[in-house]
Image (tube, rainbow, N blue to C red; front, side, top):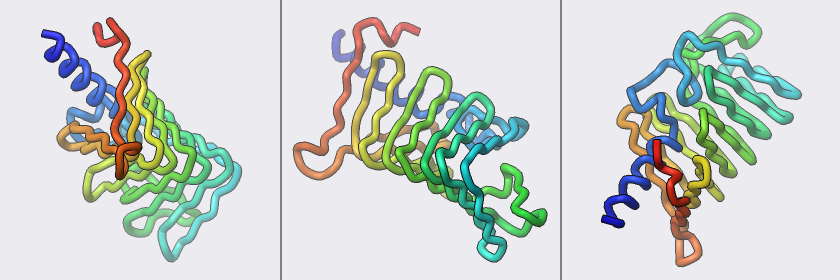
Length: 179
């Protein structure tokens, strides 16, 4: 009985903390929970646009909002597909890969994911968070070295690093999974 409750709590936390709104499939948004209709807003200290490479580099306390989600990082590099409008104008459907250097924090509803580095790959349809990863939802906490979230299947995997110190650690507060 206790084992079933722990398993249910783990399942709920992993799915919820890794972005519940995109578990239904690709949403068209860049951040979890966003749709193709949600605007992508980026606030940063500096933008460098590289036309030949079709790359945008935002730096200086970068804050990205897309629908209900927010991503904060020190630097974000966005790689685009094809040529678009001059001067770096883009749309969500042209984004093929994103790299975020940290600390990186993603907030989606009541879930918070944090790590040293984050990335999104459109071709793989996966979001990665690496280095000192912490997922929280309310009082529930999962820590590891790497999170892989498959946008298509909605499956999240948290992995520890090498050796005994690099294990996955979880703390579940009593009654916290009652939703």
